[in-house]
Amino acid sequence: MQIDFEPGDYVKNPSNIDWGIGQVQSIIGNKVTVNFENFGKRVINIENVNLEKVNNENK
Image 1: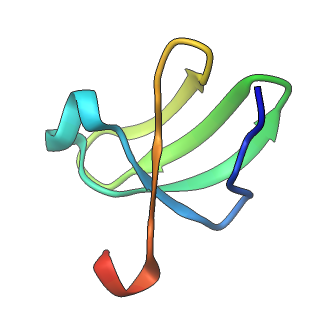
Image 2 (image 1 turned 90 degrees about the vertical axis):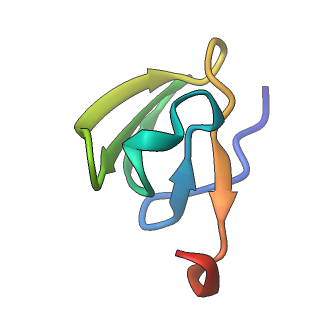
């Protein structure tokens, strides 16, 4: 699986839109740590959750 974002990028979790926009903190293997504006810091296994990158203009 290829990860198309890096620390500092903004993402959203389409399955949990109410979490808001999150900023990628770190990526280790298939685990991505994201700090969401409405839900705090979460470690997400990208094999199970499809994060979508958000352009800076859209955040």
